[in-house]
Image (cartoon, rainbow, N blue to C red; front, side, top):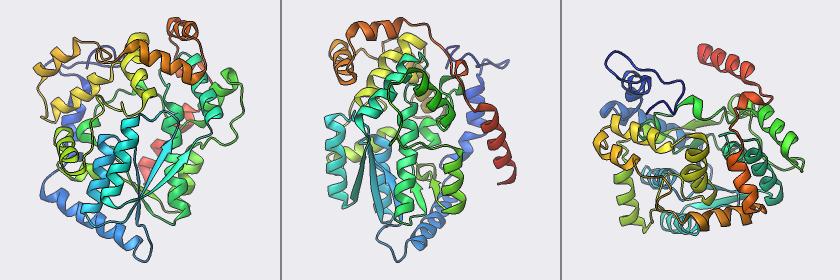
Length: 356
């Protein structure tokens, strides 16, 4: 990590706050041997009990990526009865679709796919691009938990198992991405830059989160925090046992995310997500600092056919290459330049952490 995070600071030993936080706090939330094994056993028993007389006892989101694919493998290994849910936003790579199909067929897991209204969602994505903010993925990041909770509630399932984990994702600067659950912010962006009303888009804000958590009793379970999880080992296992194929980069299973993270964010906003990913892996002992320092000298889009990816991106969104160039040249802005609910949400989160 470096000063591309404007809120970074270093101690007298030269260690940044992200690494200090990881070793002081986050490391204790990753796999801890027998302690984690025992906790996982209790969680699995609870999940099984909650769905004892049902077809499914948990929901898992699947994207074709490493984390969600490994979660699918793990749930079956632990004897759970998962229902896989895929939120299709129109940007799946062919490899991601193939990975999902092969994975679920071999694991004998049922799949439910929620397809977003493309015209509506495309307009919303364009609005976030026109807003000139780094939170380009907020529409997708909001829709995913919304769909997962909708499906869980419909089937009376009490547990959603997430691929999120501290071992590989523990370090992520808050300055790089604003709260994905601020519906006020999302609607403000769409109202200012969009051309369509959001009639079907699945929003997920604090009101729905409270409803699903406290009325429907649905909880997220971050199962990968309770097992010795390594990206490298997970890839090897998935490739060997399930004929799964790697897609070339973190979240590159989505062609939209591929261009956003490999080109738009680093070139326009000086945000290179490899720095946070590698920093976490260094702290976790998975790679060395020397290995990734050399890697970071290379552009994150070096292996992409950039012209082809940009042309596909523009064609999909019905914009011209000059429109795209103008968006890239537009002065970067912040979420704070637009209406948002930050003050209230921070108060709500602090209150929740204090009492729950």
